[in-house]
Length: 288
Image 1: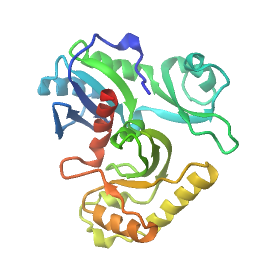
Image 2: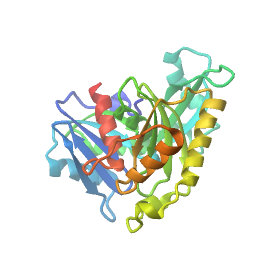
Image 3: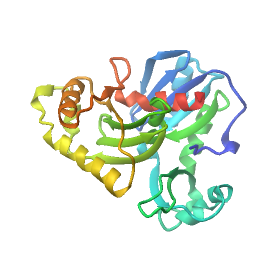
Image 4: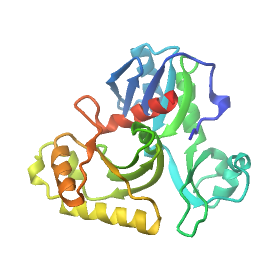
């Protein structure tokens, strides 16, 4: 999925950088240094486009190809039944389809969509993503003509590219300041996600892992799986993945293993934090 239209793109560049843009931080992974995560805070009073321009200058990325993943505050997702029309016409019809589902004029938005698994009654469904046209244009204008923008996508889709192509997986992901999220991913395609509230304490560095009681988390996981498999008719995942704070990952791995008889694999490390995964995912998408 790609929110940036062709008319906003400059000419072709060479090697790539994956970027994740949040309101407070920019995170990047350079394909020339894939084991290193670079981070820059957005300064007080500094706009995100200005911070991005400065980041490029600081890292000397002029002439590079950028793949950008947007934080959820930059976009909205809506799920609707897929209109009965050819795919090539649907992209042009999205503003009309979404006019009653957004709270701003559709002319001020850019739209894109992905196909979803069929609904319980067999109906075709899509997830439609919208983002403010002016915001995206400001990002593009901030980095051109220094760099080429290969793609602008969204974090929940970008992170699916971190998994192997053949995997049918469940991902439990926690970014500081955001709620815990459970996502079903199949063949690097987002199928379903659910926010699991009440676990902001996972961000609290002063709390040790043995202070947490994971019974409620395990219950919410079971409910989410039951809903996805029972109501949405999705196939149960055969592999589980964690992208969580390092200090709680071993304890949560043990708790899940005991209840669900499956050992999750951690996607994070000392160098690769949960917050950096969208940058890695959008970079992998551009390399595919």
